[in-house]
Image (cartoon, rainbow, N blue to C red; front, side, top):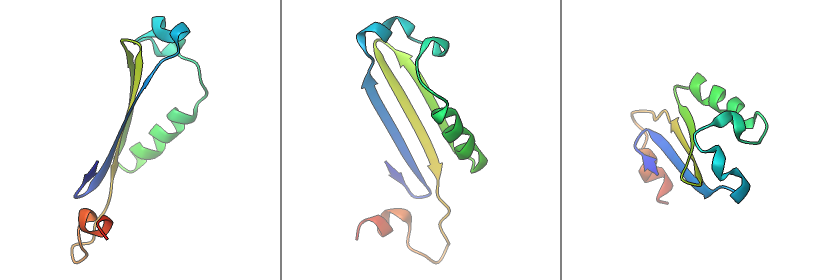
Length: 81
């Protein structure tokens, strides 16, 4: 979703059947450290990255602030070319 000064991303995916029991227990979810690295990078720009697992699905939400110069068109106008 495009906002005037930010981009928001929401991704929802079903978990594999053998992972459904790990809902809300991040220590049981498989994977590397990629999301932690992205989270740290976004936070350095006042953004956020959150993940959760519930009811057999996992959700990722990212908020990415975008600096827009006052005399330039807004982000929405730039994208609608």
